[in-house]
Image 1 (tube, rainbow, N blue to C red):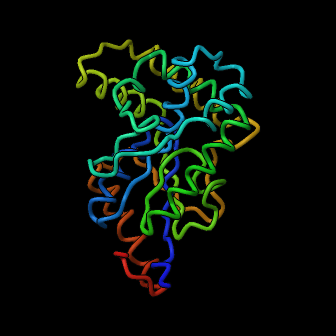
Image 2: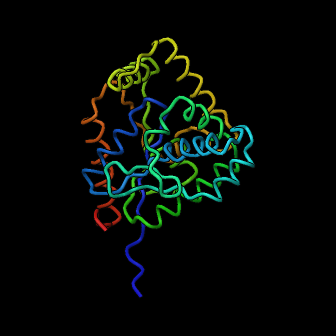
Length: 236
């Protein structure tokens, strides 16, 4: 029985506003790979806690709810949309309440263990995958073909987030956005499990002075060079 080609994973980690989501989507389109938005999974976990009236600070209860619920994606759309038990929740997870809950639930080791298991299962089912988040190259896929770490100065990341929200019709005080980004950076870097950090052997890219096309060009060149070095075909 042919088990199919072995899975190949490329990870893109980085703090909020570093451009990793846009870069992952664009790189996936160029390579004709699938992209896994792990941040959406944590947001879905936060939404699940809200819908089940679970205190996001109660990690054991959130994890129990996750084990009884399937978080997956609709891979027929681009980018893929996260689902809870088959129900698309792409818009709901972007609400302020779900965002706040996601930040809390993501700190629980038992919640992270559930979602790491789900992320590895998804990788096993998709032989060519780009996985983006905050601990993908350092924890979830430490043996990924290439492990990228994107970053940019806080001021630039703040401007990007304000522009993004303006495009969505949302107003934001830049000072409050910057404070929120700094606070998120601190929480992510200091948490006990899966802290935000550059993966060992990872490739760092400062996106502060690069446009999206330039960032994706660098990502693509690096990935294609690694594929050639290991004699791996780009498409499964």
